[in-house]
Length: 311
Image (cartoon, rainbow, N blue to C red; front, side, top):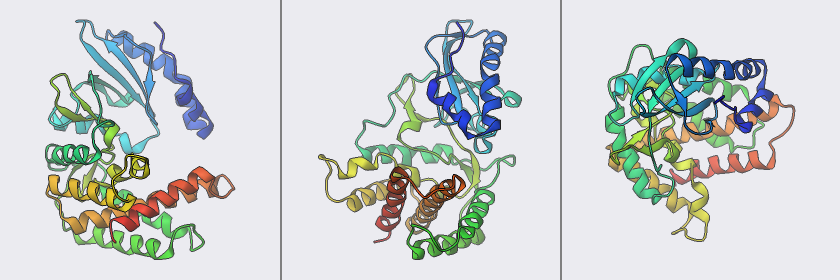
């Protein structure tokens, strides 16, 4: 059965020649890997933002997942290396890898993810996973400092005319530089993108992480994605208290479950949220326009989180 590239993944072709080249070669790559690794597709292909994911059955009839990542995505370059280092403790088991072709064979996870769990309880689960994932750093991994240092320079180069309160931009630039300079936390393997949809139940019901963007660096870098995802629930009909209250509940649940330093974790949330807002401005400018209503909503969300964790 040939692998059909999902329509939404095909739309990434609009992002440039690198994407078009990868998408053009993806059907052949998938076919080659299926044949070489003696795999049979068991369901239609799925996708992430930078990857094709094919549920498969191996030669012994065991369910697994074949994942092929966009070769221009530097942040997931060492995903297989991190999964190998974790060895199935706190993360999905790696069964086979071809780093040159950015291909991974992963254990099948039946789910569910944390999307339907009470958000504070989900934060406690994720906070507990940090202990398993934050092992001593691997020398092959790029550092949090190398990424964030470049991102802060790009933020500074955007200038002063931004739809972001200037005090938050200045705070992120100053605080980010201090975090990178002080060496105040142990260097560990950082997942980088741990949120509700990136934690699934395995066959035993244990929660494990998927889709790392692995780096080496400060474990306090981690919490922000658990705040910006599922944020619409905090203002919906079932919300308890204000958006600010909900964000602070999540933040403290993560910090307490993980035993993180509250002030350092808060500083990293501020830096990451302002960087997120800055990237949105950067993307709009690259397209020769101002932020769309959806992009402005995202910038507003970033500002709300920045404010909530500090008030």
